[in-house]
Image (cartoon, rainbow, N blue to C red; front, side):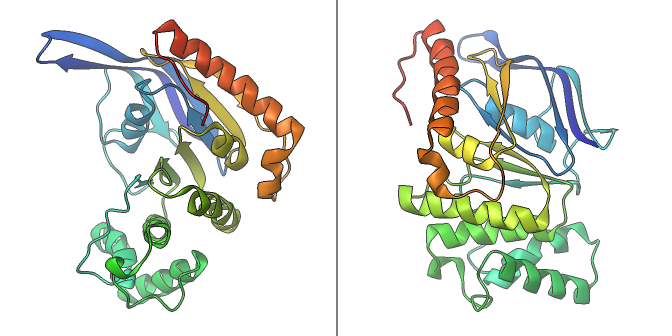
Length: 265
């Protein structure tokens, strides 16, 4: 069943200093099925985050349409939650207080339900026992788990993730990828995941969309053929490396078209 649809979306920005307009996204069309995990990759500056913010309702667009469950996106809504690169937790609130915060803003849940959901999702992300700790007492990876728990507790139809592991060290990042798949397998939310790392996209997603260099367009969409559950050992399999290389070559072509030299992730 279709969950999210972006149809012929274009976005322009006015550059005050240059006194002209730049086309960031052009005629982007994308569909995501209910419960699907889709990743988006592409050259820096191709409009990946702009597209995510448009779907989140945080950024207006100039042409096209975006809909969730057939309803047009006209601004932020309770059917979407965003997990950003930085956890953005409230330092004066405990972990439980941070997870509860999104539900409090929505005013959809009574106190008993909020308490139950807070407890459930803190345990789901592996932070049982840390309910009364504060963000400053947690590592970066643990803070991102809290951020994820807060998003899931609000019960969104679509979870939007904008490079959520980019600020983590390499070892923690790989661990968080595996943990995210375990959490997703239980929560079964529809996920749109933005990343610069091709192997992260392949490891996590059902499909990987490649966005072209600016103006961003959907260059191609790759079906990820690997069964779930997945192990990190998958990243060393020849079939995985072949798919990674095919996606990398496409991004490299797009980058060279605008004169950017890239190094593999």
